[in-house]
Length: 611
Image 1: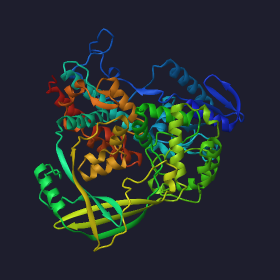
Image 2: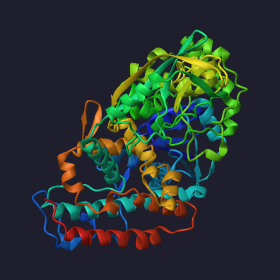
Image 3: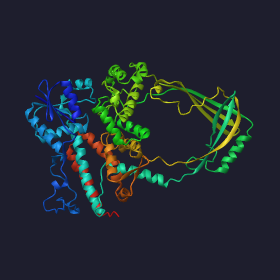
Image 4: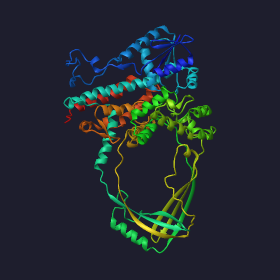
């Protein structure tokens, strides 16, 4: 008898649907062939808290918890202990899984196709001391075709133990840093709780730095000189080129009103404006890539004001409940090349699910293979796309419909030709001054019609003039504007900043690892990290943007830079990659990398007073 252990109930339902249901028992299904299918509720085990490792001589408080003392820090477990989570439903389900493990001959690990999914089931097998054969089920979608394909291509589970080891190393490192440094700096703050995390604290620092930049920003008035010109009866706009005139400040703005007026006067005095250069170019616009979770979270935050956790919840529902989209916690915007051959089946399903898009779907050409199909760019997951599942779309909530429609349209766009834009740039001499005009015309809409995209950003049509032609000055004006501070983060843009945090790092090697590791956090954890920072009162939402709180600033300014810096994640991500490949052991990582860091930071905290 095979026992399939799924990460969540929805995956178990998909698997039993494919195997065929004989009966449903408490906590598991029995398949027609006698196999059992059971499920977890995410991680069923967690690392024991420091109290488990501290001696009995440590005093306890009124809640029978051992009090926090400098002399007990840092806490380094000699033998790591996983304990069942306290939730009653989880404990009951874990007991059921344990009984099924004893009775089976083969276990199939059906965790999500990533490091955490691998560890989630593997740690249960270790908890129950399972020694018999184990296989691995890997699927990024829950539609029936994908599930059956995964069931027909099970692999030995031991081939993926590196993924579990990398996840275990991450789990332990985060425990050592979070538990020890949070306690040490809380004591430094006279027992006012300070929560520190390897990803959480750099994320908080991103918002703090942006808030500081916005508060210290001084807005200045600047000027632009614009001219309306005419050639062959066609009027168009041009800008006066200010480079090389010695009128720009250090930030590249014209801020002197007298200089602006003098330039305007000189332009108006010019008796002839002659064309000196005409550049024309036709460009095909590249297809959009498929969607990562961060892409969808940013889109939903900008367009609908959704929080990151709400968007993840909607994506999870589309994947688990409705089976209309693939695995949502993806950090990848590319698709496997082999999956391109499945496009006709996906388009056929989309035609049935989306009658409102039938005209567009009929125009889609599945022979077109855009840049999003690229095996070299695939990580543990691939981009989020629709599946072959067919159902009545009216069953979706309004929020689910919004996100699903976006995913469908981006997928459809892959099967339309590239848009073509004609761009023209004209330079003109007005005595010693230079005027520049740019315009673009959309010659072919291509996939833009699918994405409901309007004209390109610069749409004025320029006249068909040539070098040496003269144009007439109709009017010239000074346009006044003010410099603007950088935009505050909303939850979508903060997640993109976490993903692209390599741009804030100068060290080439650290930058590379942050980029290769897709920044700090993962698609599976970023929304929860932001929610946790809000729950702890470190971040607040004001007018749909995130702001740092005084409570967070109070301790953040006292923390060493390395704790706030994403470089720590860059270093650790390099180690996780080595562990996954079998080139580094978890014990070496703990003893040679994490422990020295924790010891140093705890000692620094002992000499810090947070007021």
